[in-house]
Image 1: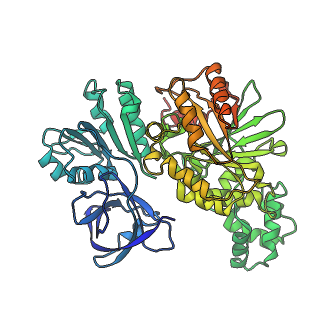
Image 2 (image 1 turned 90 degrees about the vertical axis):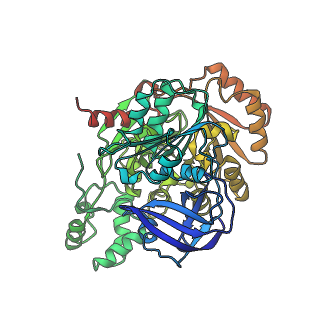
Image 3 (image 1 turned 30 degrees about the vertical axis):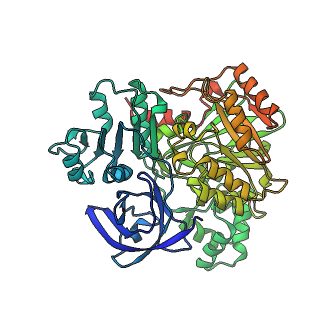
Length: 216
Length: 349
């Protein structure tokens, strides 16, 4: 098991039905895009989550949805400000260092890109965010405000103002030939990652320009 | 179609779990050993066949439990003798097991999950996405219900799914397969393959005596992460560090699986880097031919490429074997058959 440290929860807010943003104080540095292990008990193996906050924020944000049969999230949803949790040091290499890139996420897969966004790395980036419903387009207002031209929210199950009506793959079908010379970063379910990657490859993006982070 | 599983399955339970069950049902403790004996050593298909357990207790068990044993719903036989069995999981999904007969050994490649979450670029199972975990019983059933089970010599967990993303089911299935009260197989006949989920791999290394295989496919982190997204979370140097820290003993084997992709991962710099990163690890490298899957940008190597790569690795002192391609005519690469069944099910027209 990785070394774990105590952290104090500062907030645990339900930001959409079944979706929470957990905040806790931090005493470590990290790189946007990294993951962290979280557990409520030192004897339990930490579960991994991407950090959603920026590298200069005082608190660490973790975005999660409650899975009824999950090992951690049902309990995590009951955590309150002032409670202790246990976390690992951040690790992982889903890190975007390029000047130009396209970020594609669905659901809570937005977390690493939110971290990059709140770290100020959004210039020259395009963000394509998908979800079934608009309330699951987490951080929508901030993205819309800061990336007005380069933020494409996609909503597949309900009509939503300002959103493309359909899945991210359907959006990508409409855009013609994507730039094959820039990197594409994908984060979301295995289905989304595989479908989007296949589509980009079909449209001429070399596979070595596609980086993916998966949930497990 | 969802298969209604009203009752819990008995098959796949460990002896301590069976002891808990019989205790809860008010039966003597030794009944657990009798149940294990019937399920794992004799080939019963119903609880009623457990004839040394009283009729009343059999009825009680049957009220609460199903045996949980099911035959394959489909089999395909290759011209080379490889057979691919399609099983239906308790949740009504499809899983595969491939039986590979060879001159000196007969191997069954079993699945540990329905679909997979890992999204490897070269894998057909990944195209199904993740559909669910298999229970220990569903994993062991692939062996128990194999028509050739009496000829079976080796089991490899290299079918659908990432075994260490289903640690509980996999560890329990290994216990059933290797325990004296279970199938009594030698752990040296079983290999579990992983892409390198480190925390689960540590548990396996500590608690099991079975062999370990690690999917490597490139010695370079930046190249590997484009083939295998897991590299972004659990990097190859960390995986190798974990293996180095663990004392494997003389009997236990580590192998590295390496699919060769034409023009990508078989250059002299790959050979040199393989020798560097595997230095000091007593291991074997298994080279596999890539079998192209739909929409893949990766290409299959020809025989000469793979033979030259093997020779180059061996010249660096790395024990290397080339795995023969088997069952190509029946989509024996993992995930091919079940994906076809899934597509048929989802698109009946």
